Image (cartoon, rainbow, N blue to C red; front, top):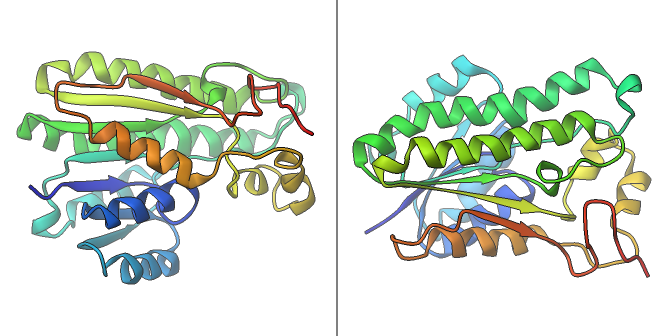
Length: 250
């Protein structure tokens, strides 16, 4: 049976690495992102391995989500796996100094975006009486760290929603899992620090951070367990990391 996976935030980082791995494993792909040029490149690149379609929309725009998913080609109507990966961090400031625009951006994408996409796809899984949802959280959803306030709050919300989905969807044979990475070397910090490359590099200097491919491997492992197995919750650190704030930088 050919499986179909729907991946948000597919044009970079963990989402892209997961798309590449899934394609090589012959999983049919629905790749979502805001950057049409990157989606087109991915479709061409991964189309060598599997069937691929792309949807360009912003997960934080409810109507855009519904419209895009409603236009899926017939062969992509059945969605077996949903990877809720789209997310971001903006700024790293004490709450009294934080930007409300940054707060809105994080809550809109990390929480509302996850909800909008899930709401559009879950009814299909209920009809199928099967499915798998993987929510990409963060160690920030397990611990609160200095100046992380609203980003941590958004990822705590993802953690809570993951648990709630598992409870609410249990009767429909829908598996729900969360993966909470620690430090992963992607464009995450560059976005957080608004393009300040030096600050972003410093986050990953002095130790070997996780790579996007490491998390993709774990996602694939989780979704390919026997159907009676649901890995509920995974926290993944680089060896040098002991908590959200403790890193052994040599």
